[in-house]
Length: 256
Image (cartoon, rainbow, N blue to C red; front, side, top):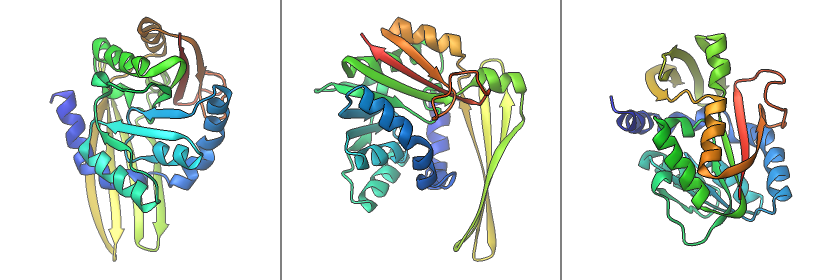
């Protein structure tokens, strides 16, 4: 299946369950200090989330006082993002769009690619187009923040299953079980969702494939796109990459 077709198929079925992985409050507690430090340090006022999904970072950064816009290739995710932002009384400045074709009238101080989004792009040429789209949307001296899986660590450990999510709510039980299939040129995340409502369970199985971009490969592509002064972390506590060996990779890069 074509990667783009696979992506749209995945999010068309999964958009309504996407926000159940982790509560937004838990994510804010984990990420807010990181963003506060990085954005204040770099004088950021305007932010573009280039893979905004259901709007978490648009919402969090808007609440922190930043002007935030967002795009996403999935109309299903944008629909959910608009609903989330409106329910919070926030401006829904999000739209369907592809970062590889991004054109902006006013440049941004920061552009984001969060939540393992960049690896949706397959082939160095498409990754480069995405990075160039992000680069061109920045003002001189602006920064890009990229968050994705550390695929080198994943492949090294070869974990078949990764930590699952389970919670009991007043509406019922929500459970997610993740299984990974490793291939030379792609990695498949299989997600079993079990949603119990009114004592009746519903089972859904979804699969999405990623381009297992290596750390060195990403660094080279970022530099080729024009970025410099790369800083690499392995968590939102800003631990240097490799200290604890987590499965997170966070890169902060600057436009010349």
